[in-house]
Amino acid sequence: MVHFALRTLLYDRLRFLIAVGGVAFAILLMLVLRGILDGTVAKSTAYVDHVGADVFVAQEGVQHFALSSSVIPATAETAARTVPGVRAAHGIVSVPIVARIGGEEAAVRLVGFDPEAGLGGPWSMAEGTSAIDERGIIVDSTLARSSGIDAGDAITLAGQEFVVEGLSRGTNALAGNVVFVTRDTAARIVGLEAAYSYLLVQIEAGANDADVAERLQTALPGVSVMTRETFSRNERDLLSGLFVTPVNVMAVIGVLVGIMVVGLTIYTVASERLRDFGVLKAIGASNRYVYLVILRLGLLVAVFGFGLGLGAGYLVKPLVEYFVPDLGIAYRPPFIVAVFGMAAGMSLLAALLPVYRIAGVDPKEVFKT
Amino acid sequence: MTAPLELAGVRKVYGHAPTEVVAVDEVTFTVPQGRVVVVLGPSGSGKTTLLSIAGCLLRPTAGTVRVVGKDVTSMSERALPAVRLRHIGFVFQTFNLLDPLTALENVLMPMNLAGRSDAAARARAHELLAELGLEHRLRSTPGELSAGERQRVAIARALANEPALVLADEPTANLDSGTGQRVMQLLSRLVRDGAAQALVVVTHDTRVLEFADETYWMEDGRLRQDAAPGSPDGSSRASERERGGT
Image (cartoon, rainbow over all chains, first blue to last red; front, side, top):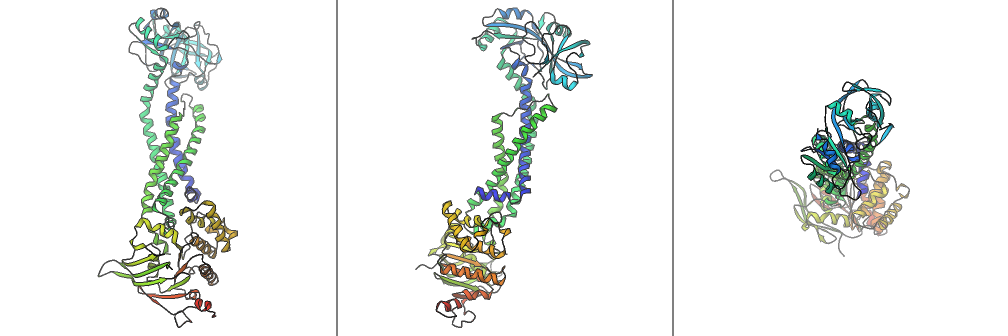
């Protein structure tokens, strides 16, 4: 039966390609849109995920990093170091800021860290050093590439000139590429005195991050203490919440386009091959058999379309990441499975209309010339 | 011995009085085993309606149709495809092969529908197509075959499930006279060889009478047994041949 459905589908190659292309387009649209959302959100939490802190301390009520500003007293740093289970605690200054880089203004996240402590600074360097001085700055490498600057160049930030001493890797994000300066410099730029934005805490080996977070919360009143996992999840939820609705709307449009293309194609195939279905009925095929042929036509289109769409998705991924480095694309396996389910559902739905048409075929019509 | 086909008082009326059309009017006839029955008649005489009723594709308004002894008029719609599949083979004027499939696959189709094992179905299809001289055309699609070859594939398909009855609707109409002659020779030989138990041909082509054991004339929905050309007693040339005639 699969064989007959496949041969019927392949009988007109052009139409087959159009149908498969339509589904592939819908799949690609769903996959890329959701992939961009997931990838971009994942990139936006890169600092929290990779900076090396196990626990984050923020101003009371602050639950996020990228789109929030936070101020905590500098005394929290020394107080945190006395909490059992804490191996290291270092304050950072973190604020969104507009910088003039490569002659153009760019929204960036300025992070001031203590180069001697290391914690809070870049975790991967593409070029140069992370051991910067007060006039030094580390710029995200994709931002540097798109702005046409390199290590050793000078850039202006808040009216002050800095020398690019290093290019960091993995620190670009839609919400703002990260640029690093020393903590004192950052505090001076934003006018913070005896205060930091966040406290980054590393726990001792064998300690439990949730337990340490709880102890920190008790020891440091008036702050929010979160494990890395919680802080990162808060960030992802916030960003996903901002973009998920428009992405879903576009994905639904993709699905509707797919349903229309598959529906029209299967309907056309069924209409053009109506006589074949009449012949099948005449020689003894049951209605059930004929319906299953139609549904299999739909499923075959879904399978081929899904394969093509998925392949195209993986081809598009490096292109998007190269040309729009602030965006990330991540294809999560559960979503891929869900997309296949949607493709199958879409094609089966599209096959319903021709099923009704086929149901009306009178087998005795085959006697007519 | 059960007759492959029996019709008793079959009537088919389209529409309602006073504009009703009687397509088949009180037809009673039996097709015995091993016989080639030809129904002649002009266009619009009701031949195709009669064939549709005999093939369980159309329910009569009245009367009884028995296929291999089973009363199909009392069967549900859902049961009829199985009767067609297992007991009846169809040969159509326009061949009605499935264009996307090869000759071999077309012959395999009814056997696949009947649930015959793939190996057995393939062996049977190869055997039939070889018998019909198409062993070199197994992988050809209908579009690559001549009209005569297509009709032979259709005959192979009709015989695939070893039916009790083969119903042929104008099987020679789209063939040149020589090919039509060969197709009829083939069909009648296959019936006599036991590939099918009986053959009913409806046609307006009088050349087909040469192969008939029994001939009927149909006009205005009425059927009557008729003498074939050259056989004043009503028997056919085929019967004469069997009796040692021409």
